[in-house]
Length: 490
Image (cartoon, rainbow, N blue to C red):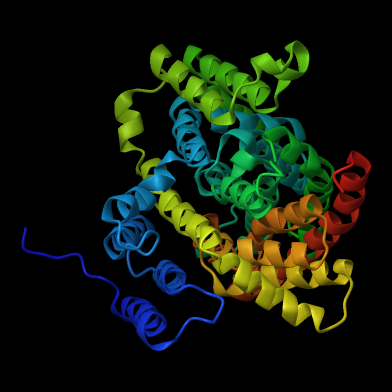
């Protein structure tokens, strides 16, 4: 081997320059310890490297872990303790919940169950273009609780189904016929993704990080369970899913509005898949078991003694799939995305945790809260302002994980300092962490896959994304706020 894998020079130089400037040339505020400020320098440099894609996110994270261990910023003068701190993220159960769930989701593609679900819904509701849109919506919502990679769900499972439908009607970018049906279905395909990602803790990787940051920000007083999150998201999520295909239909009406042949096309695809196989039945049974365990049904029926930790439940599901032969160990080893997520998740959770322990988040929350408090706003207006800044700052991020890691804890702490009810604030910012994915063609991993297929222009994508962000925000703040009030969450 005589060829090196180069770093991207510009983002690398920017990340290094900012880190060194903060470390050596910008003194910490009077209330901040030097080692806490140095950790902040490493953290900001890491986020810049991730946003700029200086290296793959897993590689950046390994370097960050190494730097925390070598510099000893979390435990000055104690190299062994600093190393333990640097590796502490790997002991976080929430990280392994996402890792195990991503491994489990391999079975959707391997067995063909994901495609079967999608084509089944189209066979039922596909006589109109709007019906196809709702069929895609139902299919992704069905898969969301057990597919923690929103990219795999929206881009890897639903998008090929959407493309095959568009192709069957002669709607292809290379033929300049996207307006027939492909543009509309592509925008629907993508805008389902942020909503379903917001509806379940296990629907996208950053959600468990949000749960962890809320728990740390309230010193364990607020622990959002899988069931509590899903119940809170149910009503606003359903409202958004019902509205979204109609809004996109109004913005970019397809030329083909009646699709009487779509159900027949879907049935042909189902026939091609053949009868439901034993691996599909086992996968379906595992997913049903996981939903029951994650929702806490055994504990509700038989008492807290039978409560199962969500990560333990995921581990049980993975063990069943491996033991039954639906998945092989080679399948698990080859799933680079799962192992990559475990690594970068561990690094970011570790750094965010120690920023809190060393007092940085408290200092930053006072700074943000102080700026807003000078405006003389009440907690309702302050929460709305925090949410708007938090959500629309995603225009500057190409990763929801980077965004959540960089901003969530500080904004959550600032909102609490301004008097917002912790559960309400956590839900609003937590759900916004997924809803903000609608904004751009680089907002999350699903976006470049669907945008790159060429059905929409950049202007059409951004216009639809901004309008959907406004509508989703209104729905989740009003309908959601009333629903959470009725549930007694605030």
